[in-house]
Image 1 (cartoon, helix red, strand yellow):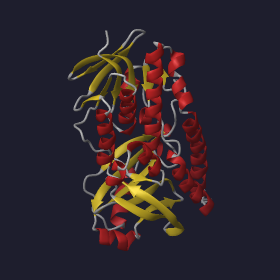
Image 2 (tube, rainbow, N blue to C red; image 1 turned 135 degrees about the horizontal axis):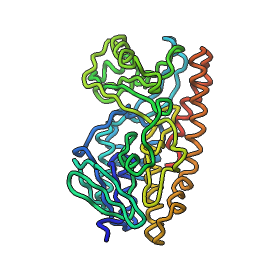
Image 3 (cartoon, helix red, strand yellow; image 1 turned 180 degrees about the horizontal axis):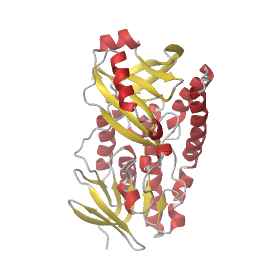
Image 4 (cartoon, rainbow, N blue to C red; image 1 turned 60 degrees about the vertical axis):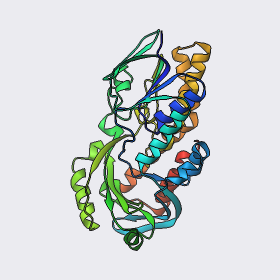
Length: 361
């Protein structure tokens, strides 16, 4: 009756983590990815010291793909240095990091089909049917890990889209620069730029032979974001090549609990992002692995009730708590920036929140 126990849509960190753990549980698992693997993902690619927690799951192979280890962070406010502190971080290319976790899923027994865009998802009391350009597949459960514009969320009625107030827009580019020049300009530090008249922030994140330059704000404030990005790049004497934009959810789905019978959402698809810093990688992994736990219990006890699937939020309760706290901190931060009330203590809180983004992995 079923092709698979679990179908996971989206081979980012959340989907691949979910597929890996489902397969390790012995569940027959299919992981679908719309792009050709390995695929890139617009992202600053900065891991805070919590990378140690990720290494604990995925082994020393994570350390092998580190692009750069930075020493600290600098934050400017209206052009003046506000804070400079030791802050050892780890820089990655998402193409390498995401594919590492996908390979772990394959090694654990999950089947992966890439270049396979999902066109429809039908879930009823008996099964789930996932339609793709490479055919249709049936399963007992589907996990939507397909990002902010999740087709799983839309087709199953879990989310028709994010409001402009509940979603951010970021524009960024990886720009070539010699490591010597990076050291000269930025001192092997990640750099953030804040302004009283801009409810968002700009950044320069050094990597190996390039820097990631970007700017982000809420969609509701993003009317001239591309102009601001161009001005930022010119100000730093840089020439941006491949410029990419991507949206970031800034709140959890409130009315659906991220699930319905036989359907779960994780990662960006469900709003598992730390709003204050836009950190989504560790929350995606946490929520993806928790989704696998729910799937294992559901299949083991043959219980596909909504009550069973709502346990996903319970399994993520500490992460959910942190996300809600971060959302409140973001409101305070936005207010402080807007009315020139920003103080070093708030910036420190900003960094401390980033520190804690992955503490529950």
